[in-house]
Amino acid sequence: MIIAACAIILAGTMPAAAAATMAEKIEQNAKKAATKTVTFNVSIHCKNCVKKINDNVAFEKGVKDLSVSLDQKTVTVTYDPARTDVAKLKAALEKLGYKVTVQES
Image (cartoon, rainbow, N blue to C red; front, side):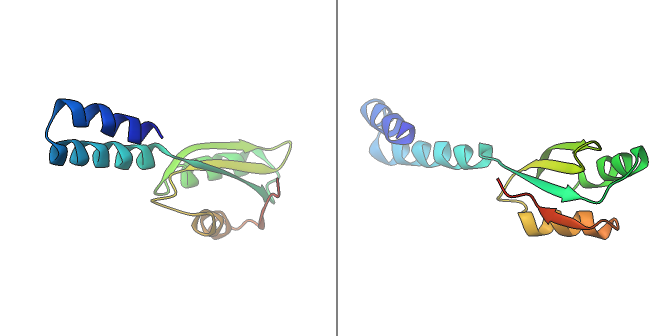
């Protein structure tokens, strides 16, 4: 909806082809800005587990934010779905030696 409004505004101030190109770029940037969040139940048991996850999973492609809760035994990841997905993030945690399940909302 916002993209359509931008295209209408741009169409009145520049040639139609340029306005369409600008609207397409705006839409691409909006998609890039979109993120998803997933929470995993993970078999962590100490502060070293928290550190290990923070030191490794935070640098996986597409990870924007990472929160590890030792008390709840969860890992919450905000990620760019264009660069990664839930299966890849789960695999990254499992590679560290943990049992991992996706927490249902």
